[in-house]
Image (tube, rainbow, N blue to C red):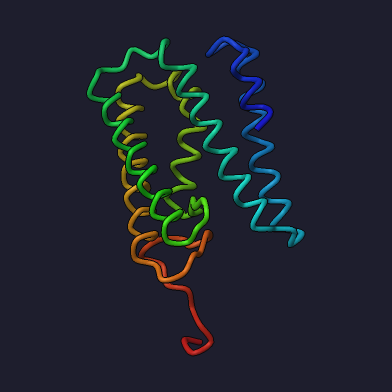
Length: 171
């Protein structure tokens, strides 16, 4: 979270931006890996991780809004994705009384692509990169919303709406 806030004081696409941004992404990956490897996961840690991810995305979008020359349709698409995400959080709050962001495979893939966006933006042209990212983000947002609506109990680590956990009876 601290790294995300520090990004507010950088110039997008500058060397300093990329160093701080990369450090933030690598520490996010490392802390989750370490927590799982040493079985130190917690409800609080999962919530803080989700908040940190959201903060990094929000701040990055805020920094890039004046820099990116995206068509209005892409900005509206991004707004639509944000609305679906907010609906999903609202369903989670209403249903489970918790701030809920689920760690699905699609959400992880979207997070990785979002993290890579500033790097890809410099390599691949902007519009195709934005379309690919928005497509994946749309699908993952709808999947998370459906999981929150259809699930009878909260499972922050549900892999996919199509993935069924094996039970002892299945083995």
